[in-house]
Image 1 (tube, helix red, strand yellow):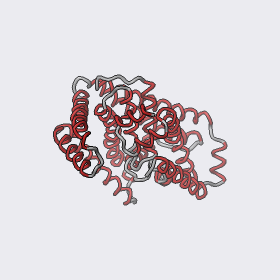
Image 2 (spheres, rainbow, N blue to C red):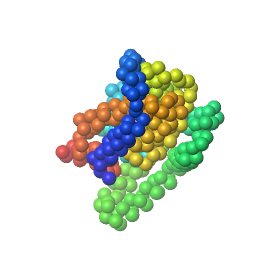
Image 3 (spheres, one colour):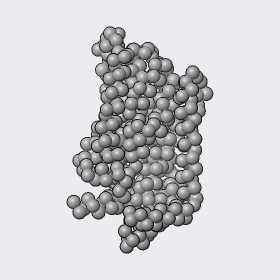
Image 4 (cartoon, one colour):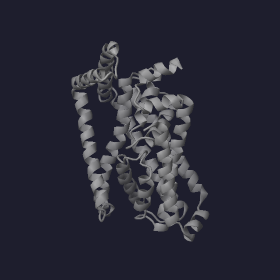
Length: 354
């Protein structure tokens, strides 16, 4: 699937689902509530998104410090937007990393370190959600009661996360395994003529070097970089709090009653599940699932439109900024190559050739 196709699927699923939600849930009372909404709270919601961007950029800077590298705050903002763009065009929101690693490589940060920085950034968010979700279910068992499908999805996500953490831990403890597995893969690629024989030695050296950089970055983060890692954890929590605070602010703007803790826990469970939805950027499921889940917090005629507005603030604005940055900073050709799996080093060489 191409980058354009991924973006088109995201847009079609998002707008198609939103159209269905509006046609089935919006009534005269919904329109009246929206027309009389307190616009000041919409500005507060937008301000929370700006703060969330700043927190995300700050943790990139902190994690880079932990790896003994330097990422300016402005670059951190760009990396944040590129993450949203990459996630929007790939299944299970997995595409943000390659764009970030490429930009970091252009700023002279080795690929191995770039992978480790972006991986730790993502895993921090997943870890926080992994800790919050069981608490949310204990506090409010009704989140999953009567919904066996959601219960099954949450259990599946827990298994995937545990396996992912086990794999990451193994790659840190056994870097030789990564090198051996990578070299075997390269040899098979050579047999299939996907890699030129004369370049195989250079690829072996690159794999050894970047695996060492990856491994060293994790060790630095948990030793001399502990203070910066702690700052990244704090900023990750603050980032999620800002995102989760958007929904209650939107509810307040239309005078809907709410309990802040309940809205926070509901969104934590929802975001936890969205990380592993196979559609590009979880589009379609995020809008439809949001309308369904938010109906436990507010009347049904408001849940759908609140889900759409919530998605606009927390995702659509950031994705739009990511598209602008990707096209302006990288160009559509480079973005397409990274999406298709080109390495940062090869793409940087190609970009210089252009």
